[in-house]
Length: 308
Length: 259
Image (cartoon, rainbow over all chains, first blue to last red; front, side, top):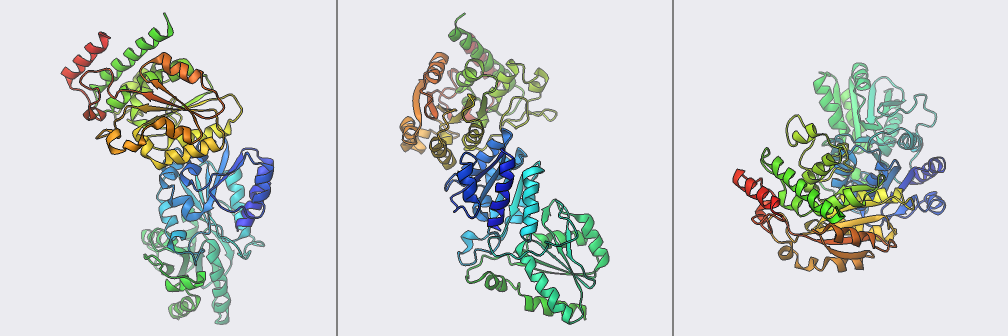
C-alpha cells in the first residue's frame, strides 16, 4: 500500500500545487522519491519530530494548503496525540494523517511499532474521520477523497506491502462514509476493514464447500459510520461475523455490537478482535493474530457451529 | 506625540481594561498578561502588516489579545463584555475562528510548529509570522523540535518573541530549570538569530526586530516582569492565576494612572 500511496499522491501533487507531504524520518518508497526530487519544497522530511510534523501540517492548512502527514501509524497518531487533537481536530483542518503499517503489520518489531487501539483513540476525537481501505483500489479512492474533497481531518489507516486487490472489479463504487459490499452472498455476513479483509475471502471459499454462502463488506470508513447500511445488513442476515486487526475496545466490533443493542438486532454477532492485552510475541502477522484467536480455522469452526 | 509615548498610553489603557474585566470573572492570568502588554502592543500596533500573522502561543494571555483586538475594532465591545460568560465565545484561551485569532492555543508548545507551517506555505512572499512564547513554555520539548526544524528549513520569515519573566505557574522558572538560561544562547545554537531587549520598552522591542538581519529565523528574548507594573503583583507567583478583589483593583488602577 505504501507504494500505491506514494504513486497516487504524486499524481495528485502534479495537478494540485497545494498538496504538501511532511514525513517523519521514513524511507521514501517508490514514487515518494520522485515527489521529493520534483517538488522538494512540498516534500519535507521533518525528521524524528512528529509533534512538529503535525503542528506544521496545521499551519500549512491554515494558509490554504492540503497537507499530508506520513509515517508509521503509531508515530503518526500516538506520539503527537495532543497536536492531532488540538491543532488538527479542534481547529477542524483538512489535514490527512497517514498511519502506515497499522494494526499488527509490523509483527516482528514489538508493541512500540503496533497500533492495536488507534481507531478507538481516533474515533473519540470530534471532527476526526477514519478511513481504512482494504486494498489498493480502495486506497486510491481514499487518497482521491483526501486530496480533493475532505473538509476536516482524516486518519488514513493503511497497510504496508503485498496487499491483494479484492475490489478492482467491484460493481459498488467506493464512497466516503459508506459500507461497501465487495462480495455477495446469502447466509453469513462478514464485516471487516483494512488488509485483514483477505481473511474473509479465504473463509468465503472454505464455507462455499459446505454450501454456505457469504457476503463481504468493506467497512472502509470507520467514522462517520454508515449506520443506515448496517440496518439493512441486520435485516438481511441472522449471522454476522466481524473480523478486525484492532482491539475489541472501540473498533468495528464495538461499533456493530453497540448499534445492534440500540436497534434490537436479534441475530448472532461473533467478533474476532485483538484482546485488550499487549502482545509480547513475534513472528508473522498471522502468528500474532492467532495469539488473539483471530485464526481462520477457529472462525470457520465457529461459523459452522452457529449455522447448524 | 512620539511612538514611544503613544505605546505607553495604549499599554496603560490595555492594562486598565484587563483590570476592569477582572472584576466580573473569577480567575484570569493577569501576571503573564501584564508581562506581555508592550510586546503584543508592539506587534499589533507597530510591526504587523495586514497580511502578517500573529499567534499567541502562550495562550493564557488571551485576555490581552482580546483587549488589543477590541481596540483595533476586530472584536466587538459586546463580545468582549461576554468574556468567559455563557453567552460569549471568548474563553481564557484563544479559539481559532474567533475574530482575529489565528490559532487555538492554551496547551503550551503548539504555537511554534503551527507558525512554522504557515511560514513554510508563504516562504519568499514577504509575509511575516510573529509568535509569542513564554519562558516556562520552553520546557516543552515540542518547542525545541520546532526550533530545530524552523532553522533547518531556513524559515527566516518567523519572528519568535520569548516573554522572559522568569516565572511559571507556581514557581520561578530559574529555580525549576536553571539550565534553561541563558535562553539566547540556546536559540543561537539552534541556528537562529537572537537578540535581547527590555520587554517593557516598546521602542527597544521595535528596534531589535526591525534591525534583525532577516537571514535566519529571529528570536527576541524580551526581559519582562510578571505582573508589571503593579507593585503588589510584580514577581508574585500567586498572580499567575488570580483576579484582584475590589481594593486591589482600585489600588492597581491608581498605580497605572500615576505612571
